[in-house]
Image (cartoon, rainbow, N blue to C red):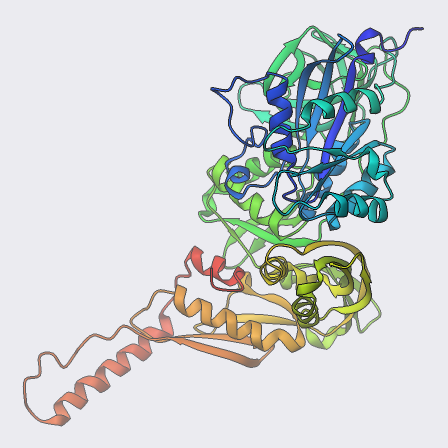
Length: 605
């Protein structure tokens, strides 16, 4: 039996991994330009970042695949399948999916900033999958570039040979030709037999309103072509392939995809639930024996509820979430309801940036007007009668009298910073209840700090403050380590004496008063004034710990009094006061959508 054939020998599957903002998308742009997939007239920066939100923020959110033809120095034409990956810690699941469909990785290191936290964690992820790693030093054209220092870091921190590191400037295109040759020589061609039964891994999907679900595949064994019957191994559902092809910025149809290829198939799949990222696709006539390992199960760490602004849009929101989950397998959701906001969904996210991105994608791509409740983590609550429950929604938190103790998730936070900002960052970590467990000087200028820290403290403004404190130079990575005891209370927000369940939060006891005061102050600015006074209160059980008041609009009842006895004026004012009391007893307060968003912000923006 022959190997995957001549074609497989000329295929290279690789991804680009790095810390955030080290130039992955810029390098992908240069590779695409060299491969002449797009002419200069139609070229635009961040060409693989197809979402508006990616362009606006200058970050990659989704892994994107593209096939680049390249004429090697040996005269052969190679097909290089590139997967560009995100760098932010919240999207590490996207990185793991990209890595599982490749044989090699370009590990990009910024010549000015050196090795940072995500550089390390992404390299370990690549090593777990036995990928061939090519170290690449980018931004060598910058004035602040320190090439000898970066090489020393690659040797000391990453344990890679610094002499093998390629020097490039992705912005100017310097060294890109040498990089192409290194990809061909160092990254092994894919193994696999085209004659074997089909075995393909689904690493991504997206939904087309006309053609249904478009499935992104890496073919490990066998081949797939138009008219062939396929089966999804997780649920046994079968379809017939309508077309297959490769990614060349657009979908380009080909006769077939053989072992080693990365491409897509369209099979008229209208039922979104039939396709699962990480599933194995095989032939319906001659199936393979075992499914591929797939991906590790995603574990959300941040939880929030989504509700439609108009309760009639609930079914539309449900459909939108199904289609979004196709394209973002790390999104987890289940049905939820609230007295204040009606029916919605309780969602799990990989971090606060992931939450923000989902919110913006729902609004932009699916035209959904949604309200998100305050984010929370998953707490472990032990009850008096020796039971135990997991709580991520404040509405599920039992009465104080039933709770024996509570535990919250902790993380091992790793911060790499220039020594000049060490004091400010240590103060920030201390403020966030962090306990320092390690401090290593990586070289004369950089320090690695290791902290045990509650995950809930990182949720809100930690990342932003870390960046502003260190002028953007500090990097941050974390992993969940387990649960530790905490003093947890449920903070309720009362509006005109009524509890608003969507604004309730689970908070650390010592922080409850400050959080309550902040929420009350925010709501005062957001709630429109009425004819009556509106008290806004923060409460723990029956104890009020913070209060603000929205002052009433006051009609000038004395305007018609020109002169006359003071008792007449007093009589009119008393009458107005009585009327306002009655109005307050029956008055309902309308809470605008902006009020929910204001509570999520932790500082003035």
